Length: 213
Image 1 (cartoon, rainbow, N blue to C red):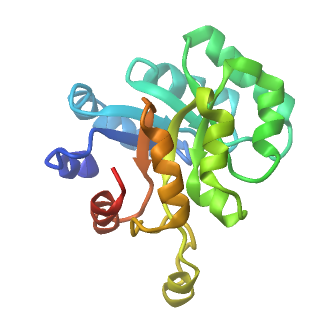
Image 2 (tube, rainbow, N blue to C red):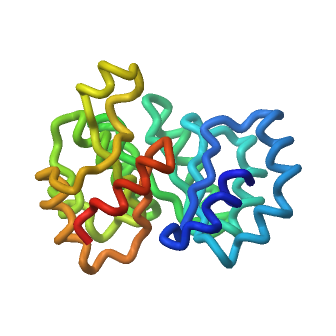
């Protein structure tokens, strides 16, 4: 709620992703305590939800709770047990009619899950993951254009990471990156969500000013 209250005054921000990288008793207790206030922002923000890396049948209650609020759920493709995860996702889609997007994380994992799910699941394009693998976000967007419902937009900075010890990706955008200048003309007719996936408001604010609208 601290984040939502802060972002409420930032009119350029129209959506928020609720992060559930973990969903244990502590997270559930926090969600319970803030739930009513979060719901008050349903008309202010478009909500999406990022689910834990390993999906469990016990997450069903979280899906059911969030389903009326969020536009879609972001999932990471599993490293193993792909068929089990695909069955779990298919069951949630059938039960709740929810929209799930699988994010590109490591090469090959996205394709493996898509091969099991078919048209039932969409795609979340993460620019940082692609850049770390030496891949072109514009080419990825062109390949999956009809299936992409959300873009996680962030850059990489190896030099700064060596200095501050933080992640190489999830870095601010300068607006002159060649991959960014190549990607943005393709987004003219894109109607999905553009998520500035960085770890401070200063980086987000700078990036919003720099991206080539």
